[in-house]
Amino acid sequence: MNEEWGDGTRCVHAGSGKPVLGQPLVSGPVFASVYHLQDGPAAPATLGNTYGRAENPTWEVLEEAIGALDGGRTLVYPSGMAAIAGLLRATLRSGDTVIVPADGYYATRQLVREELGQFGVRMREIATPGPWTPEVFDGVRLVLVETPSNPLLDVCDLIALSDAAHERGAIVAVDNTTATPLGQRPLELGADVVVASDTKALSGHSDLLLGHISTNDPELYARLAQGRKLSGAIPGPFETWLAHRGLGTLDLRLARQAQNAEAIATALRAHPAITDLRWPGLPGDPAHEIAKRQMTRFGGVLRFTLPDKETVARFIDASELVSATTSFGGLHTTADRRAQWGDAVPEGFVRLSAGCEDTADLVTDIVLALETAVR
Image (cartoon, rainbow, N blue to C red; front, side, top):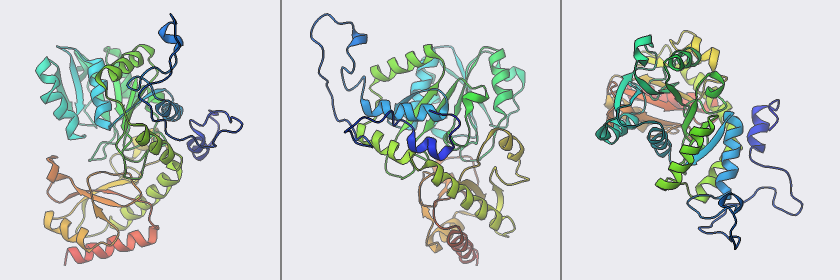
């Protein structure tokens, strides 16, 4: 793909390939568990597609599309956690130590602790902002970071962290779910691997589960591909096709979501019921200076804290546009009270995912709902 094209052009045309006379402009999903094989002693590499657990043309198109945006070679998985699990199993062995974000997605820590821990994998929890002192990396095989982190929206300096980790022989993987490939390209900032839940903003319509891993390391890619084939952690062709269709509007959706997040954050900065408001795009936010250096857009997710869980419930009940759900990045504005899932946050902590509604409507609705909630 032409790297000089803008984000919108690249999203629309990612994975399209060259036009073929008489064929559809947009290809549909391929539903197949088996394929016609060449009879005779042909080597496996010459057979093309062989079996549905190993290959599917619909995956390949989406993998080409995401890889072009990430700047690496991509494998897709049936969920973000399937991608995380595939990465951990491909890179860690008994006795290895992995760094995971203490302030990131709780299920990642749970997977290492409850499953990999019983096979001798050790976990070191470090908050996204660090401190990333040299001794942190001692004996570490894999460093997995989220930046911006979910749900706290802290960031870390990926260039500095990657340099420090590589000096000690560690692999660096970045969970890029919150930023997306249009908001941040970790492989260009020194990371070895990008992993993401495409359930969120990349597919963007709150109707499927999907994840992916991208890397420029051929040996690691081969191990990941073999691990996916043997474990059966494969996505369905229809979900994969839907994700590719959603990817075409990623630039448009992110632009509106970021616009809405900025407007909401600006409107709430002085609200007396709001504390600990964070959005990386706000000047003065603790994450802003690093985010400004390494991110190309700041995204649609913000966070704030209300006095208690009852206030959160009244706020959501009073809103006409904000729904309570536990994901983010979709067309609809959603709020998630993260303490209910076990995150170490106050009871009134809210992760708000700005959707694609008209900005004036959304800000007005949220301000009015807060007035009702805190009376």
